[in-house]
Length: 201
Image (cartoon, rainbow, N blue to C red; front, side, top):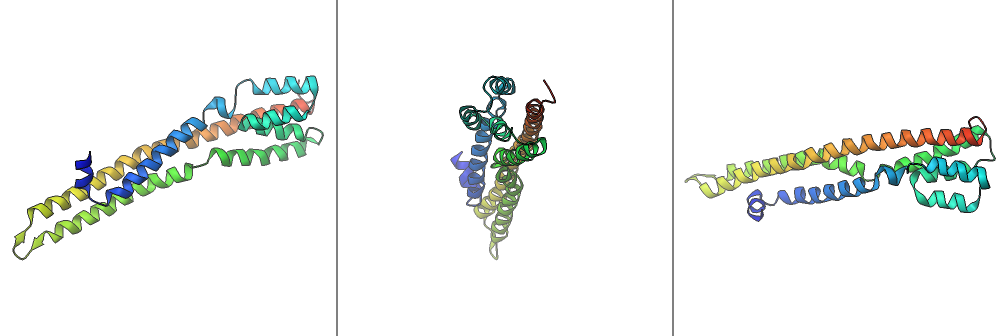
């Protein structure tokens, strides 16, 4: 591996840094966007049961707010349970925007890496081409410098694509997952509002 890095030359180091950051973001988002962590199953039923038995209590609101993103939305809904349906929905939408922003954390960076990696690879290719042209001298061609230039050009292009393709795949996957989770949380929040307002049993 070290031999490949040496053959790729100094332009490969930004690509290595980008790959490390991309892997870290992918691992962090894969852990944070688990369904049971974002929108635990059964939380709506538990919240409704607690509300019907004890009403809105400080302990219930705190427990929900500290538990999960969906719990944060439910906590906001319960805080505004005494208000009209419209006020409840507005407060839930505000909480939902904050939760969505948190779920989208680092995804812009991952998308940037996916877009930037091929350009960094292209930069390495240009550096390699400069090395190749530099190998041409009046006395002939320097084989060592020519081979080094070709290595830089090809390895950096390959590294750029190798980083960009998985980064883009995971970026698209996480964006779709966030969208799905947000829709699910919206539907559950609407059910909670309708039950609190007496529109649904």
